[in-house]
Image (tube, rainbow, N blue to C red; front, side, top):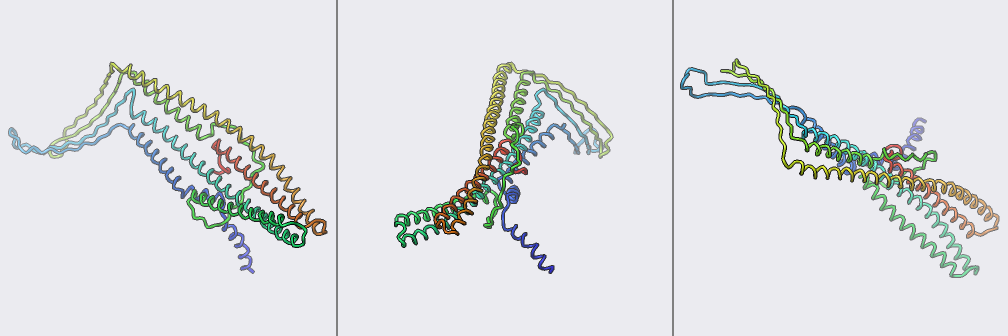
Length: 416
């Protein structure tokens, strides 16, 4: 009895294992995709550059050790000919246009941009896998309906041949039915080839071997509300804002170059020395220096540099505004299409229910001998066509919902 219960428990698990889910493919791809691995390495390199920029802000610290051996002392031949020294020094320079400071600020902005790029690529990757997954699902659902349609067309063809033998139709009717069967077979063959190509693209994107399992179906969330237009969440907008901050920082640096080159340097050194490593003598040095320099042609050179920086800032601002306008237009298009598809879904659902009711009525009339098999199969074909339209529209709703999320850089399917 326990063995039977255990087998009943394992059967659903075995069935679940023989299908792919969207979550499984995306999670696997994020870990194994060569593109995502490369993106992760790029971000690590950017973070390393920021660490180097931070370390460059530290003062210079050096430790000195020395030993000196004088082989000949003419005046004091008995003196020790070995002297030793040890010391350390700390120095730091400050200037109005400190290269290390600006490099650090640039590295901070680059690290922020790198993080945005990585997040954007993760989201885009998940969206691309979702799109490829949905294309396969939609085509497979259509293939099921086409196979049902082929069965009906084949039955119609067979019945047409029987009616022709009874003299109730012409050879033209038989040929038309045969052509309909051939067209159905061609459509199925073409769609099967398309599905095979789509699956190769999907599993190539995920970098996973395709074992041929079915894909778990997806259902649109009817309760899902359309998100408000919020460009501040978009990775594209954040990246442009980061670029604007970088160009503004460059402008500030170039304006600083109008000023004289003012450099303040402080250093501290402590040394000890003596004969035979006795370190009896000590020496401490504090050095403070101030330097000022100014190029005669500086005003003319920097004026053009600052002008170009101002133009760069303005171009980024225009690009940012253009991106915002384009995003708002795209948002309006997507939301309008989504509302249209939702209304269409209600009509298709009603049409599908009516087509299903018509099949039940036609089957009852066929059982009573009121209609022939041709009329019954025509009703079934109408139902299949309604089914194709219904499911195709539902997958389009899913696609539009996630297209809006992708546009606003919201989480794909609420997860990525």
